[in-house]
Image (cartoon, rainbow, N blue to C red; front, side, top):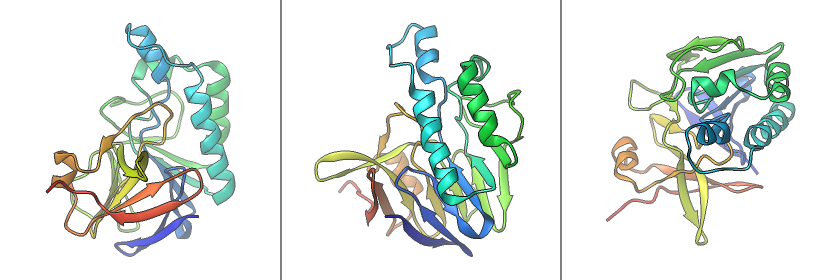
Length: 217
């Protein structure tokens, strides 16, 4: 079950995967893929994670592209865990990603982890304005805007779930990548960003559930 809502003049749909679908533009938007996270942590002597996280993310992305028929894709920054991770993608994963990009208008928005172009093709922009919406990595600019960066999450029935955050002027996407973690919705940074009456659109494997955005007393 998806959740449809307006932002500005656009009619958008949140998907349980954490992707955003804009049917009128045949567009899919995802944020914080963090491809290569396990490789980057191992390279820098950090925690060891199972090395399949890029493949798991690509599998979800391919399913969303097939389901929506999207011909344009916006990746809202931190698509790679760092630029070295982009260069060091496993060849199988690299070819898989290139196949998904083929024939689509693909935009990489710069993030704080990957603030520079890669050699994968597509367009590399600091931010993008399309049909009245601004797409950027970190929210807080002129709206209406769609952003990422914070990896918001919320509790539902005592369990943590990734969540979209929505108010009258902005939408914050959850992290799409595997093993990306998250920031609780009542964190001061998100409390300051989102306006009164904001919703948390909580995602589970099968549905999106809108609830009032949790706030600290």
